[in-house]
Amino acid sequence: MMTSEQSLDRLERIAKLFVRAGLRARRNMKDQNEKINIIINNQIEHDDRFAKMSQSIEQSRKELSHAIERSHTELSQSLDRSHTELSQSLNELAKAQIHTSGRLDALIEIVRWDRNGNSN
Image 1 (cartoon, rainbow, N blue to C red):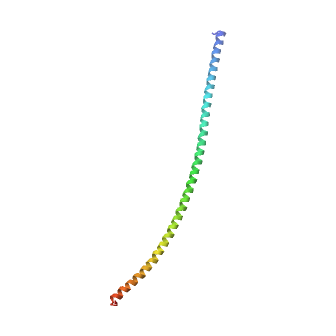
Image 2 (cartoon, rainbow, N blue to C red):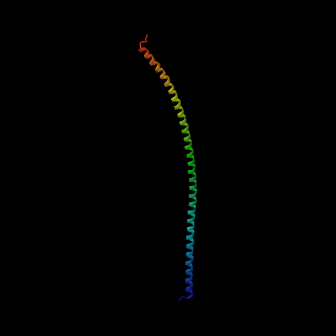
Image 3 (cartoon, helix red, strand yellow):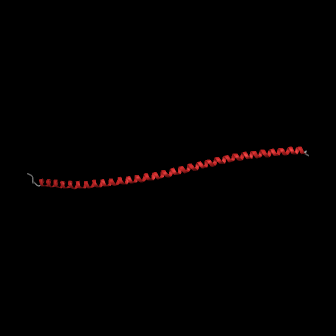
């Protein structure tokens, strides 16, 4: 059997073990809390970066849309001008062809008239 002094020493050792275990648990909990705070801060930073990137992508999409719209408008205007110029050129060519055809008909008449012995 143990003496009361031995029992008291044993209780002191057990108490010291409990205190050490408590301190160790408290230290582990503090480390875990720090790690959780780091994770939370990283998540907040990630969310901020993601939001900024989303805004940047949306802004780029709008700018691209406007650029495409401007290009389409400019291309349409350019095609309209080209069609107008082509139409004018074709009209001028048709007029020139009519004039040339008339002159050719006159030349053919002169050649026929000469062949039929109507020369001087």
